[in-house]
Length: 580
Image (cartoon, rainbow, N blue to C red; front, side, top):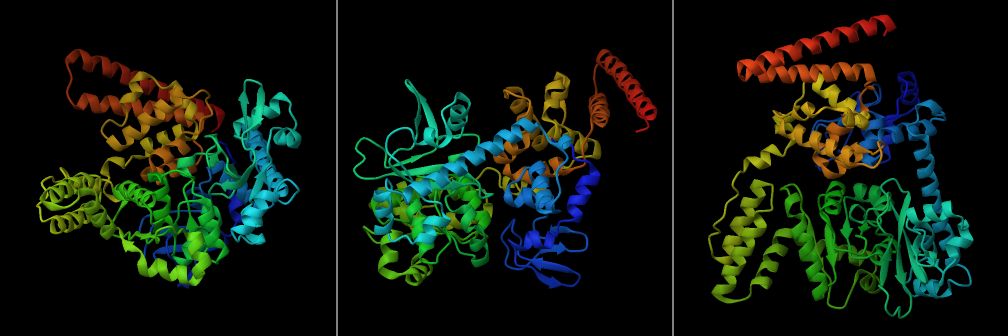
């Protein structure tokens, strides 16, 4: 964790207008002394998201998300705390003090990697308009993509053969290693070679708009090659986390409250070229749960649009299955099957953007209707078919976490099949427990809260914990699970600089507000952390003594408690001596 001086953070915030920062994403209107808008963190029909221009703070009275400018960038745009500070400092014309930067070498390498990807995209875009790119340019012209779409979405061309990356960047070993790290080259038996060759290239951006990887479409017959090739998994490119068009379309989607999920890159671009900058697509594979979660955060009424053929219906069914755990009564996704043999691009050429937008509104079927229709197709006819339908419905309903919605769907499935479903969710309280406000086991006292902040801010501290520390938080299952997972992540990491917070947020999105708060708290310096660790062990011992132990165990623990108290006294004397 970067240790920014409080005075520097104050200066950054003093030069930042949170109303301008949030106003780029949320339509704010004056309401008394504050401004109000629809919360960007959850779906609501009446504004409950308040921004105080005076206090430079925001708070949602609906979902409880709140904080300042740093927190907003972390929660909304996915910045780490140091990145948020540095981004706002740069906008404010402030130079970040060099001594505050965490592992400056890592920061320089990351910046260089992003620059490599950006330069590669620019070179591919230039190649598209050059002599070698004629075939790719002709394909785009035939697909009807205008020049501004090609420019704004950084489409490009990777020339055939090997050597394009070498000519662009050089061939020294360090450069080749970085190019391999970002997925632009691979290492084979005869050295390094270009990963993308003779392909139309699509630049893929992260939530912050940075190019993190590419998708390449083969041109011509492409015998023996996959039609589409994506970048491999890299430190920056995680296929299951990304959606094509996300950074380009996010603000339009939020403002228009319209979102359409399509199957491929060209579908997204075809929509954009007809004035519908509301399309998103997975990266050439079936859409996953994390991607669906992002879609629901953007819009509560997304339309999942698929080709009307068998493959399209199968893809739609997989998407439906994966969204079941995320569905809530407040969400209203719909499914649109296009006519046989058509895709968004072909229909847009025939109908135009306005007609396609009307089709999205009129012909998209609610998710429940799509589910029931799909069950009937899977089950078949007759009494046996109705029995198969009921069994499949039972199995799928078990994945749902909204108990009220699950009951409504169960009633519809019983009405449709004529069979009373047998299985019931064993514990509806799971749904209540999953809501942040009801999770009593995540309420921490001040010592526990600062202790977790100290660990998250400096994860290497996990490596210094004793075995006894694994017993901390056993009375708080949700925190203990998070604590244990972070402990394991740090133990398994190859370096001490692993970004524990970001990984935990990716794995445990329900806890992101709490994790971000720990990261965003005042720095827990080493001497405070030592005191917190002593307090944690002492509190744990007192709890165990109260539970009742044998005389021998009790005497031993009392002795350890006195040792901890003596160590605390020494720390206090240290603080006095240093004038802290």
